[in-house]
Length: 304
Image 1 (cartoon, rainbow, N blue to C red):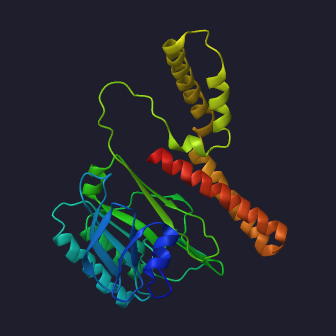
Image 2 (cartoon, rainbow, N blue to C red; image 1 turned 135 degrees about the vertical axis):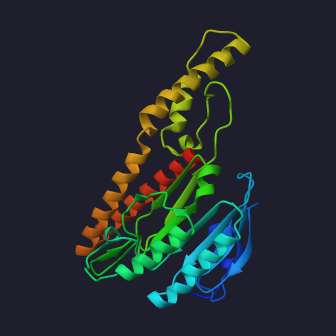
């Protein structure tokens, strides 16, 4: 979290439903974690807040670094050196580093300006290379910051090579800008599936978020089987399992494509609202954002 005010742990802990674990030395980076997770600070500087993250769902600790880089090339040199220093003491532990690096990595990361930023890009690229970090790629918007026609990808998440060995997949999504010039980033990781044999039926939490879920269950469960007691139950369970599989394929198979479509709809709605800030256009923006948040929750359930 990158705040613009002094830390207020109680207020934001309640709003986020998470525990506050501290801020960096200038108060510009805050860390919150979910219940039963922990973050132990190992390095604290003006541009980075670094520590060891543990979570019951992850078998091993991972190192996390939250970044809020300075605005000038000279000031960012200290950040690049800090990254190199951390690399020396990682001992092959998985490492995620992300946040606002306040610079781009290539000319593709910017549109709306032709200012030469070659030297800054080289500094950043050399730090990434020296630290043997990888960019897992992104979904969503190509840019994370926009103002007055200028758009840039200033925010990103990088991972160490060992991180890709711990997780089956690492997915980074640039979320839409909502009332801010900078958009948040969502990172999700999938643990390896160590189950042997055939693929077992798995109930997806995202199903219950769909407005048609209750109807699917009721219609199928209430249909008679003409069988006695336990056999009746067994037939109903097998039947609803088949129903869920078909329903999942029909309704949720394209959830990732639906997210992309929703992002495009938000961009259109926001553009129309900026041109005509009417109550109707504002309501349309809010509607599209609400639908996007619901889809994100469904996708998060799928990844969980």
